[in-house]
Every structure is written in C-alpha cells, then in structure tokens.
View 1 (cartoon, rainbow, N blue to C red):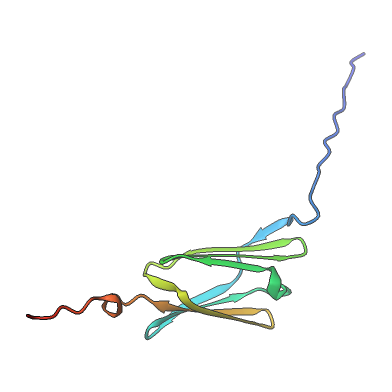
View 2: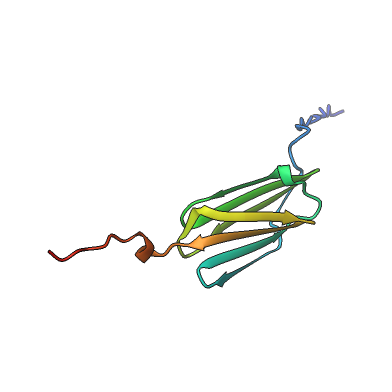
Amino acid sequence: MAVVEQKTEVKTEEKDSPRYRITPRYGVWTDDDKLILQVALPGVKKDAIEMKALSDYFTLRAKRADILYALDLDFGEEIEPDKSSAKYEEGLLRIEFKKYNPLEHAYEVKIE
C-alpha cells in the first residue's frame, strides 16, 4: 500500500489587491501644441486614479473592486508634464499634455 501525502496550498490575499490587471481602452492624438489622451475607466472612482508623467512617458493606475487598470505609454515626443490638465467624467478620463516647444525655452541672443 502506498502512502499519499496531500498538500494544501493556502493563498493569502490582501483585500485591496486586485485580481485582474487590464490595459484600458484608450486613444491618443495631437492637436496643434497639445497631445490628447482619452482613457475609458468604467466604474472607477476619481480618487482611485493615479497618474505620473515624465517628459516622454506616462503611467496610469486605476483600481475598481478586483480590477487594476494599468497603462504605460511612451509618447515618442516630448511634453511638458507640469503643464498638463485632466478631467474625469462618467468613466472617461481626458488628459491634455502641452507639447514641448524648444523655441519657447530658448534664450534670446543679442548682438553687441
């Protein structure tokens, strides 16, 4: 007779840890001196959205029940993150980033 040892695995999960990680639907386009990003976040509360932006990179995390919406984008062109604005209404997040224009930051050279 063979002795079979049965192992039970106990999974401990935090209450706040999401069960699923999903890339949300989104659209990106440019308009004159802006880069516009719209992200669908159905059922997410405004205070559950976290965003960070660098000069050419954007990251978003948004939690809803057992779902984590995660989006990481490399824009391919430079923006000015400190001149961005966001609006969230009815599950749709709209972010406008100002494109970086090097001539706006250039120094004027004067002839003596």
